[in-house]
Length: 337
Image (cartoon, rainbow, N blue to C red; front, side, top):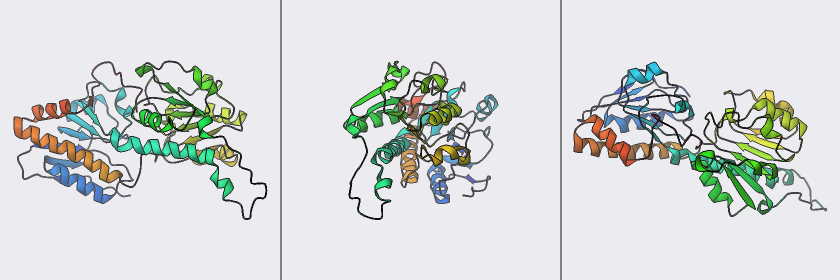
């Protein structure tokens, strides 16, 4: 999809002097969405699209492709970052950023549903049933029951919590690993039939699935990753799949993106791996739900500005009214997504 011209500015006739900058928009958003977002924020002041990241503004709207440098954060002097995504690893290593408001509620349900769809696809094996052209006199159907499965969740943030809630009535046992929430033991992975990978990418989760990790897994384990590609060492995953032909993996994210799927041909031909293009958080009403979230914040900000008649005070009130992420000190939410 072609992006709009980089010189787009919306001027407000109202008395709200905020400057709002959106440096990037993901390609699955339509041009009509961008127009709606412009209209929404023009009620607050000036709206800039696709300007250099150091462009001065009070509010910065980001996505997972927004890459900061120390120079950018010093020059743009933003007071607030709005991030309508779940993953925010592009901010983790940055210092002195303003508060960040996350739109976890926009993406997390979709990613959860996607990962559950992978689970049902793998164990349902419906493609094998419906490929038959005539009645099967043996009527055999080789599959385990979901209620016999042992599951491990890597990460117990927004997505992990949703998975825990939806899987609890379905499977035999769920083990969670999340050192930031007191779940420090990984020993249960030796007995796990399924491993859901859903932490934020951070120093504590990067390359978490490495050679020593894979050595502990069952030979027919199912891995599902719709979090971040760099959590898995892909060469070690390929080695593990080669040595364990009954193991399977669903990957929506990769160490390098875009990813050449041809590099996975060997395992694709063995029906061990299923690949998709970082689309787990994409769904039909994504644009609508993103606008709903941004509209809620815009309305709150207008009210606070009318009350205080001061940019900084209005944004501070908005931040205190919501649950921001502060990257000024120790980051205790670093394993969450």
